[in-house]
Image (tube, rainbow over all chains, first blue to last red; front, side, top):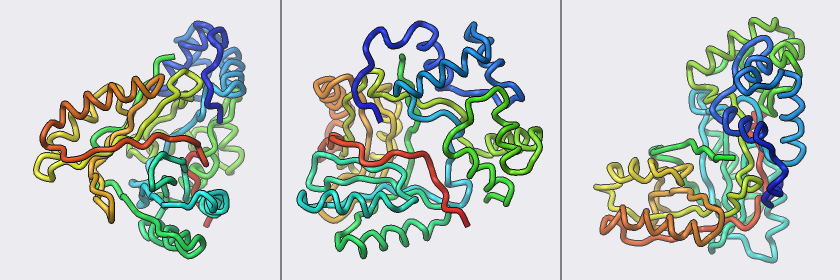
Length: 157
Length: 158
């Protein structure tokens, strides 16, 4: 994933409008790009081309449905590990190999690896975390959410 | 819970919507349903909250928000449920959760702060500290130095 800012001229006004508007939602309709494009002053075909380009240049990380696993009977859990620097690549490979690992970040702390487990069944979290402990020989601290105060964030392009 | 058809829809769309004029028809043809059925099911999943939204996720980094810090706070248990929503409501906080404390980990309130650089993130962190006041005993911030993996939700096929 791109981590550097795009050059100032990478996006024009229509690209910015697309990024700002489609963060909030995209229609369920037979020809949804036509519908979404109409509000932005572009045809469906142009919207598709622009979205493909925005993905290509790394301005978009995802386009599509965002699922919440809780109503599916599953859950998310934030986990942290203290990984020795010399062993970091090996542990990262073992952790990332699990499909339940949705994101994984290196962070500036004694606990230097932080990842989110997403599992369809609640026991999937514990099973996966236990598996990671067995595979790596390191402890996996588990921080399930007790309460969600806010999730949702808009970036202005 | 999801039925068998919904599981197929999740599996077919968790990588994203296809960029073609009739994306729902394309998904339908992949999983042997009609376009109308896929759209009706997805509307229902949206209404139930299984799908939070159908949208694009901008890349914060590409748009100049290159610094993000996970701020963590040890907040009085008696007060954290009142203070949490105030922190979550700040426009620079993208996620805010109450989580259990752990071994060697005194923090129970987690707030993800985004900014153009670390100096901006630190200024915002000071605003949170001011809001929490004496209810907070200790705090820290963990900056991400590397993304090791980032995917949407992937369900194991069963």
